Length: 108
Image (cartoon, rainbow, N blue to C red; front, side, top):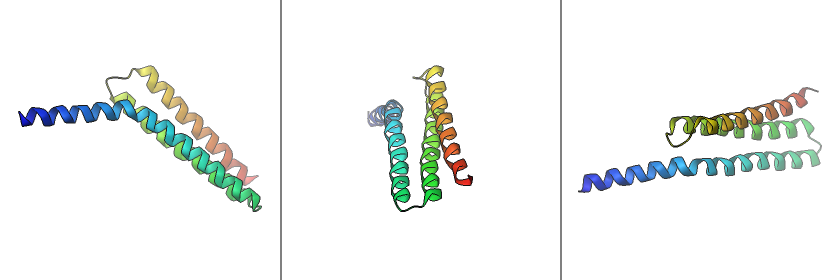
């Protein structure tokens, strides 16, 4: 009986992780982008424009990695369909592009 209970608990934890991960990822994505923008604002106030773009770009890059990880988790989970995977992959690509735009502003 104990072995069945442990298996049941393990399955419940796994299902909770796969169900809750997209919400956690959204929260972390917003946090990464907001922290990057806040740090960039502080650096702009000091007159350091290049580092401001770098901080903002790093925030977008971190959000991009998070979106790619989320899309891979959704691809592996049987409870999600491929359209959700494509949406999260697209979000990751968008964040990657925004990060690249910010990093390119350093050079100009």
